[in-house]
Amino acid sequence: MTVAAIIVAAGRGRRMGADRPKPFLPLGGRTVLARAVAAFASHPRIAAIVVPVADLDGARVALGDLAGRVRLVAGGAERQDSVRRGLEALGASDIILVHDAARPLVPAWLIDAVIDAAAAHGAAVPGLAISDTVKRVAPDGAITGTVPRDDLRLAQTPQGFRAGILRAAYDAAALSAARGTDDAGLVEACGGAVRLIPGSSRNIKITLPEDLALAEALLALPPKEGGRG
Amino acid sequence: MTVAAIIVAAGRGRRMGADRPKPFLPLGGRTVLARAVAAFASHPRIAAIVVPVADLDGARVALGDLAGRVRLVAGGAERQDSVRRGLEALGASDIILVHDAARPLVPAWLIDAVIDAAAAHGAAVPGLAISDTVKRVAPDGAITGTVPRDDLRLAQTPQGFRAGILRAAYDAAALSAARGTDDAGLVEACGGAVRLIPGSSRNIKITLPEDLALAEALLALPPKEGGRG
Image 1: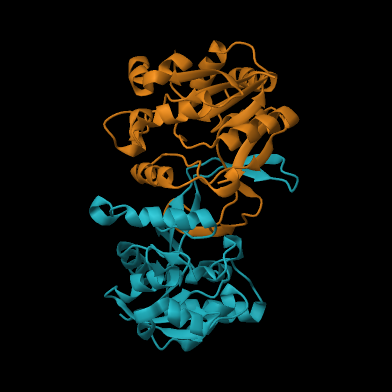
Image 2: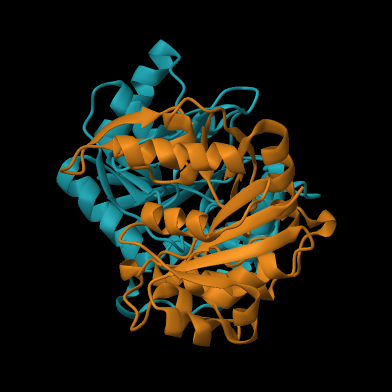
């Protein structure tokens, strides 16, 4: 079973308010992008890595020694376009993982779990339960209700797919002009089954400046006993 | 305008898997409870603090010097019962804040913002937008859909209320045996208007062991410029 990964790094990350794209920001002595790529490049089950980026030269610098381990491709206007270009650049593989470079702390055990669940179920997404009360708000800030959250999960990446399922979902999305916030959403949109598996609390998404500080802090924490942190 | 705070510390925090109740766990050289209480005790607009706890003696030890700043009362079987006992112990005040001791890092600016919004609107809840895709799952882990999240917020505490509104909501809940996951939910249940205001990303809820490590890491971070972290 061959496994390939697409690590999407084409986003600008405007909410960071930084002077350069989010994947190029420093995190613990490397860049965010290099940390995300290293998680897959060092994983024994990953045979190929494609990285859609907005700035090819910038990505080479950000990757440093790791640049030789990945295939860089030009990303598209939106995330979905970037994944599509990654799919076009990938050779044959049994399982495809799609990961956001904005999650640079993904643990190796989670990559394994997503591969196994994708192989078993066709499509798999890691996710976390919600520990906070969820409110629905009107545009003016008035709360219109409390949303039951027992059956809700916050989705993470990598999301994993049997290659044919992901490619078919992207082909269908191209025909229907469907837009999704994540890859599993496109599989769901054409009726495909997707399995949710437990995610990792370390696997945060860097969206706001304080998330980067948080990631620095998490890097300083030891991995949990048993590895399921 | 007098403002009082109820800081609920009666929960056991079983998901922590620790040898003592969550409020009594150490965090940056103090206890979780002492940090939560200190945020209110050091705030110039807070006139009175009531703390419902399961273990009065343990709480005195956990609070140390701060024990003299609060009124400790015995909590109830569930969070809602504990808040009710806090309300019974509180004297007259214009605004009542209800806070979970499990959020020990609440910033002073957020306490101010909740007081002001409660005074203006009657009831106010701080909350954060959701940056992750939200999935709905069946009991077997199959994803049944992607949930639009633009109008969803993750609610935090302190939640703030004009005193009459909160007391009326608790009276109504006692008659109807209504249970809510938060205090604003009881106000919503009797048709009261609640306003959502921006929360703080530092104001995490300590639920799992890794949250405590994260709180330690956040303590080491400097407050953001402008104070809105």
